[in-house]
Length: 106
Image 1 (cartoon, rainbow, N blue to C red):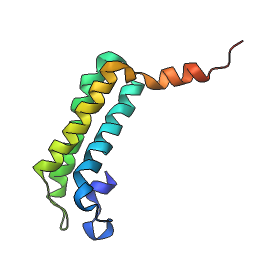
Image 2 (tube, one colour; image 1 turned 60 degrees about the vertical axis):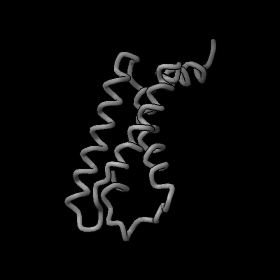
Image 3 (cartoon, helix red, strand yellow; image 1 turned 90 degrees about the vertical axis):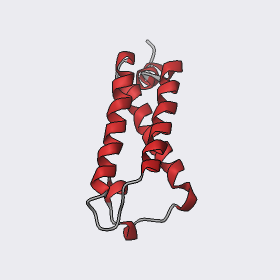
Image 4 (spheres, rainbow, N blue to C red; image 1 turned 180 degrees about the vertical axis):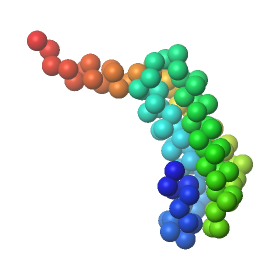
């Protein structure tokens, strides 16, 4: 959220990797929540994270140094879809799997 709304003169210019960072950020956020919630919530998580990105793009249009870009939304969506696919392939509930693996055996 901060990276989306801070004045652009306070941000490091990502250059041509801007869209890659959008995909990584939104994919990571999606995969994080897919690891916390049950598998039947995966699609709701994807929609929610996309809506967050959409709202942040709209909010950027109200700032003086930022602007909304459709390409940013598409990059966000590519990361979200990749994370949803990973979740459907078994990465869902990853945090419970990590906890189980770390739990001491008696």
